[in-house]
Every structure is written in C-alpha cells, then in structure tokens.
Image 1 (spheres, helix red, strand yellow):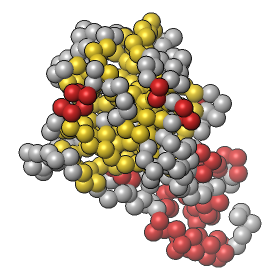
Image 2: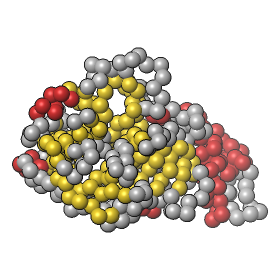
Image 3: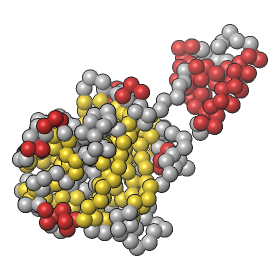
Image 4: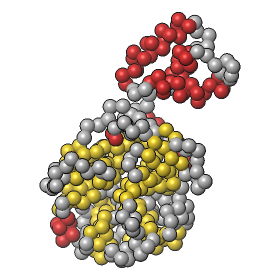
Length: 382
C-alpha cells in the first residue's frame, strides 16, 4: 500500500467506501483507528503517510465479522431501566444473548421488547449496525476496566466483544440481574464465563444504563466453574451467589463484597431422572412472597437438557422448600435440532403480572420465549 500511487490509493479507498460504507457506522473512523493500532510496526514517525493512505492501510488490517451467524442463544431478561411511555399493564425489558460467529467466538448482544399483562411479547426490531464499545481509560487497581458505547447507539446495535486475553474465545452465558441495594439504588450485574480457548474464568459485569459497562474480576474458592448467578439483593446484609463447583450440584456462597466468594454450601443436587447427570441454575433467583424461585437446568439420558424449578427460603436460601418433580420445559420436535441437539437453556427469567416470562435457547442455535402462570407453577411444586 505504501508503494501505490496517490491516484491508485484514492481510487481503492473510494471503491471500499462505496461497497462497505452503508454497512457500517463511521467506517472512515474505523479504518483510521485500525491504522493507529498498527502504525508503529509499519510506519514509525516521521514516515506517517497522508490520510487516504492511512485509511487504506487500516482497511487492509480490517475485516467484517458476522458475530451471530452461527447461533443466538442462552438469553437472560431484566426490566429495562426506562419504563416510560407504557400502559399500566406493560413492562419494557432487555434481553441479553450469547451470539456466536465464525471460529465459535462468543460475544454479548442485546434485544428489547414489551410484555403485557397477558404475557404477549412484542420485540423491538433488531439492530442494523453492530457497534463495539470504546475503552474508558486504563485498567483499574483491582484489575477491572470500563467500556462505553456512544450515547446515540441503539440498544440492539451494542455488541460486547472479547477484549482481554482471558476472554479471547468468548464471553459466554451472561446472567443479568436487576440488583437493588439496601438503600434502594439499582444496578444491573451479569455473571458470565470468560473463555480463553484453553481455560474458563467466571467474571462479573456491571452497568447502570446498558451504555457504560464495568468489568469486575472475582476470586475465591467458589469461583471455579461456569454458571454463577447473583441474587437480586443482599440477604442478611451480605451478597449471595449461586455457584456450581462440581458440575453436578448447586452451591450458595455469601460475601461482604462482590469481589471475593468463598465457603460455598451445597444446597441442591440431582433428584429426578431428567437431571441425574448434571444440575445447574438458569439465572438469578426471582423473589416471590412464597420464596426465591430458582429455575434450574438438568441433564439426563441422551444428554437431554430440561428446565426445572425450585423454591428456596427467603431468609435462608440454603433451605429448599419445594421442587418441581417433572420438567417445566424440554425441547419439542421443532426445537431438538441444532448445534447441540435436545437442549433448552436459559440464563434468566422475569415475572410480570403473575406470569413467568422465560426466554430460552433451542439446541444452542436460536432463542424463543415461554410464558407460564406463576400460580400454576407453584401449585405443581412439592
């Protein structure tokens, strides 16, 4: 590119802008930023070329990536921070999804919609231009860091792509929860699995508005496996987290801060044939007057995944009050085929107007919704 004539450089850049300009927001800035990332190895000062050549070099070190071409699955759902403009029977929600593309790299993306009192769901249109956030300053003292999207970026355009070496191959299975502190302040947290390609690391994500996100490292002997899920408030003055240390049972850990999780207590193990091989959570527990409603996933014969339900004591969630003896949800004939067949899976549900609103993945490929009356679900538990 450095050897091309100025006329050829301008012609090549113009052709690229005609072909790709409408597919991306701020493509010239994308090329300019990419040049800055590689220029020290290619064009050390004072040999920095003119703008058109810089942009063309940036283009040669860029490529499109279809981040959800392979799968869009493992959703969680929370109430949207903005509930304005709705009728009294409606709720605005945010769904987070695990998007997987070429090379099986996973990222976090979002959808939004409205659910009414009957459980009818209207999804907002998907995004048109994928946008990744920019870093907000250097890493913090605790090893965390912050990123932010431009304020005018539509929610469905926001993609959190792997950034650190621990995340190199993916951000997997984010379990978002709307967390209310004792003083009434609200924040949204997500536990997720960072996958480097060789090892997994549970990590924590915080946002107040789904525009700015802070990545928070976590540690401790309870931080060893996938599927950690934060309770939506403190219990007895402490944070509470579900963990899965052995892949076969569920544990509960308490902590005075969000960074360190130790001394987990086993609270739930397989009890029915459909969960003999493995049991885990399907997101953060939901607080009801009757107790904490915990959705679980169970794995049985032929690696069939099902979703179940358990009720935990509000004051002492190590106490199991009731369990659903049969699956709440399992794959039907239209949902069985996919990247991993015979799987239904969720990373979080919500309650609205007496209904459980449950987004779930179908065979690690696509996502759907199920709606169940809470009174029927609780009545079926024993």
